[in-house]
Every structure is written in structure tokens, then in C-alpha cells.
Length: 523
Image (cartoon, rainbow, N blue to C red; front, side, top):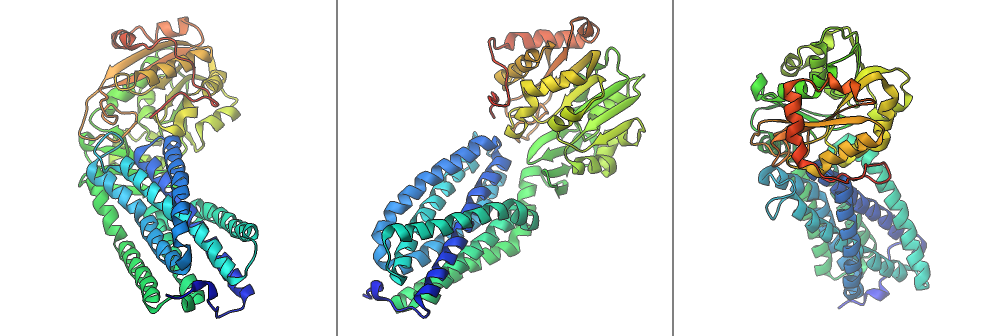
């Protein structure tokens, strides 16, 4: 067996050391991209990005420790094992996003379901990638010391310096280059290919004299095979996405758009068969959206309503209900995603569903994040409609916080009313009553109520429709105003009174308000 500690290099020691550090840089960048890719895909498919990031990062850091310990047994043949480990890391990391999406599409698991669904697969990939990344650094320290003998502390410092700089580049490349240019699936495959090429080039270009003939062929064959798999997957990624989309959304998915904010999918064409999904979550069902939007809008419109502010609602459906009422002079919509508004204006099915609301000259749209927009608003409104994503989605928790409702109170005219979509009551009563507690903590009087809805075969995670949340059979709303008299007329209708009586038995007493520094919603 070759004694790899006496390997002669084809370049000077200084150049060899530089090439090893370049390899460290590239491998570290790829490793961080894999971590971020897992977090992004998991947050998209499963929801609750804080939980998913915590799971991925904690499991990977733990696994890196295991990998470092295992690498102690591989140091004698460090070039061979480093080349094989990089091939394995490129394969596992490169294919991780596609495997998670396949599990989501064909098992339908969104966090409660079968073993092998995205949650379990996420832990498996985090563990595997962490072990492989953890084994890199000890082997790279061995390689750099075989080029130029130095104290162990100096070698570790050099390797970690290159590793941290590579992590910085990978962390910046993921959101600003890979996602916009390649997307999640192709971006992961491309990263895997870069990883395989870098690892193979370092071993075969610099340390080939220290490998046996069998070792050289093993490293070359492993990396060529991995590159072939990644290239084949990249060629087929379009067909895979279409097949997975059909599995998730059904055969009649007709629009799929990736904006800077989210993925928008429209299925069906007729009103009752129409569905709108945002990032895989069902947000609108043509079968019962009218019941939802009227329950949200109509009670708040009982009273002065000349000026109305809609937070969210870029689909135009809440605006349709507002514009039905006489006396409305102006409706302002604050919608983060211009892509939703474009579809609401121009998609035949969606524009028909919203009654071509965007043709009405009283309607104006501002593309901004609702929290930021409220901070800059100086106008006041008779009615504010909060038609925002479910509070169980981590990205939306600040839009259901005490601070957010404090900003809303500043734009409410005297006698003005606020209507809030607060998620399903039967499925997540604590979430619903936390919303109500947060609105009350902002100094508003509240009237919580719920309205029943239908269910469908979709179970796509937290959303604003009764059919989207597993187990949900209703919608919860909170109507609020500064003083009780402003609510009397709004709650005078029989349906609202029935909704109030229906919600009352579910009350969870003593819940604190959700704040920016202490969010109290969970997916």
C-alpha cells in the first residue's frame, strides 16, 4: 500500500497549498448552499420556516460532529476518501431538493403523515449531508499538512479561514444567483456538479501520485457517475416538475408562475372548479370563496365605508365584495406580490371570479409589505380589511402581532372598523383566540365569530380557506373597533350573531398577545 505521507506533488508546495485552500473554499460554498436549499424547500413544502431551519441546522451541526469523528479512521488514505466523500456529497446534496419535492408531490404529506414524507426525509438528508460535510475538514487538514508541514493549529486556521469565506460566498450566491437563475431544483443539481468537479479535480490533479491505480479509477468512476446522474436529472427536471405539479394540483393545473415572492398556481377554469395556490398552499377555492369573502367583508361594511383599505387580497375578491356596497368612494389594496395582481387583472377565470374589480376606477393598488406600508400611511379609513396569509405561517406572524394592530388603529377613522381573517377555529382554536387577544391588546373592542365552509380533497397547509387546513371546517374572523357603538350595527345581522355564538364555546382563556419579539403562533 502506498505511503501517502511521502507523496510528491506536480506543483510547488506553495501552489499546492493554494489549490487545496481553493478546494476548501468551493466545497464550503457548496455545503452551505445545500443547507440553505434544505431550509428553503422545507419551508416551502412544509411551512413554519423557523421550525424547519432549526431542524435542518441543528441536525446538520450534530451530524458534522459525527462526520469529524468518523474521518479519524480515514486519515491514512485521505486523498482517496476525500474524493469519494465529495462524490457522495455532490450526489446527496444535489438530489436533495428533487427528492423532497417528489416525496411531497406523491405522498401528499404536509407534516402529519406517512413515514417517508418530507418531514422525515428532511431529517435524513440533513443527517447525511452533515456527516459528509463534517468529514471534509479533518481530511483537508491532513492534505494541507502533506503539502507543507506546519503546526496543527496553523493548518486548522488556514482551512477554517477558507471554509468560512466559502460559506459566505455560498450563502450570498444562493438567494442572489442560484434561485433567480436556476430555481430550487436545478440550482441544487448545479451545485452538486460544481462540488463533484472541484473534489475530483483536487484529488486527481494534485494527489494522484499518492493514489494506487485502483484508487484513481475509484475516484474518477465515482465522480463521473455522479455527474452523469446530476446531468440526467437536470435534463429531465422540466418533465419532473410538470409531473410533480400534476400530482400536487391535479391534471388541470394551467398556470404556474414563480415570482420574486412566491409560486402561484391556478387550476381549473370554471368558477366551482377554480383553485389558486400560493407556495403550495390552497388560498382560493371557487366552490366557497364567496362565502368566505362575504363573511369577512360584509359585517365591517355596516356603517360608514367611504374609504376602505384592504391588506392583502391582491386577487381582487375582497375588493369585489367591498365594491358591491353603495357609498364606497375609494378602495386601496396593499399587496406584496405584483404577480398576484397581474393574474387577477388578466387571467380569464380569476378576473371573472373577482367581477373584474380592477377595472373599477375607485380601486388603487400599492405593492408593498403591509407592515411597512402601515408605518408610512397618514390617511385614515372607515374600514380596514385584513385578508392576509394564515398566522400559522411563520412569514406572516408579524402581520398578526400586537404591533401590527397598533399600526392599524392609527389609520382607523373615528368609528372605523377592522375585519381580520384569523384562521380556522375548529382546527387551531389557540391560534384564533391569540389573534383576538392581540387585537384587544392594541386597544380595540372585538367581536370574534366563525362561519362554516366546505372541505375538498386538498390538504395543502395553513391558508385562508376552509378546505386548505387539514381538519378545518370553518373560518374564524375578528371584527374590531375602538368603541362598542361602532360594532353594534356591524354585528346586528343574524349570520354574525350566529357566528358569535358558534365561536364562543371554543374560547381559550388567558392567552397573551403575540408580539414581534415573542410570536405565539405555530404551524
